[in-house]
Amino acid sequence: MAAWTYADHDFGGHSQCLCGCGGFACRAARINRSKGRVIAVGGVERTVFDDGETAEISDGVAEFYSAVGKLIKLFRERAGITQRDLAKMTGYSEDQIGSMERGVRTPRIEFLTIADDLLNAGGVLRAVADDVMKAKIRVATRHPAYNKAFTSEEAKAVEIHDYSVVAIPGLLQTEAHARALFEMRRPWLSEEQVDNWVEARMARQVILARKPLPVISWVIDEGVLRRPLGGWQVHEEQLRHLIKIGSTWGLELQVMPLDRTEHAGMGGSFALLTPSGRPQIAYVEVQHVNRLITDPEDVRRMAARYSSLRAQALDPRQSLALIEAILGDR
Image (cartoon, rainbow, N blue to C red; front, side):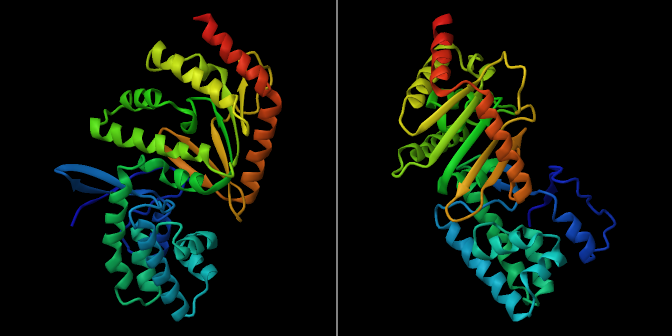
């Protein structure tokens, strides 16, 4: 059995109990932490995070998570326990329990262990825990582990709005730019990992050719456009690609200029996604630690912040003119 490692992502400041008592209260505190498992893949040890991310629709993994979710629901209803009650018992939200039962959120390994006891599942949920981790490994090289939840939701969204103060948004990156970003990562990535992640990032961009096209907008900080990552040749191609995107009907690209004295985005980059038939959600990421935000009030505030950013930024025509000017400065 592979050893567990615990990765403290500081989501909400939950404390980890170290008393070893094994009580449900302590375990409920621990499951609010992101966790990883060290597993040998191709002779190389990897830490695969057990982060409860949204299931990725590929290679039959989503269907497997859906089956696991149905098992959880079956045992919960057989035990006469509501989603709200199970949420209170395990330290999850009622929405998270529902998402796991629908197969759109992957259950953490420790959740399956706790739920097996609480729902009198007779070891069934414990038995599938290792298979859940193996399924995570299958998709771990397809997208960076820290943003699989986001890319899955992005692929289904009917609206996408993105503010970036650090990098060109993934949907707008050229292949050369994306490769440069992954190659400058520290610790170093293998050539195979870089190839896999570049391929996955390019595949995401099929969204821009979807019919009907989602409602999409971006606000990019001017500083991002002036940083020639990958060298000038790569950067020039990237800037020209942004001009092409910004000139495409239905795609709205704005630049937040450096000379603004009012700036609503000083809290950092974020994205807003609206899944079909579901409320808008938000996404934040820093140092490869991420969080999907579903609390309605938190999302409302971020949406209001994005509206302010769009009002403060250059309009689309002015934004394209600024990008042209940056090219001309060279």
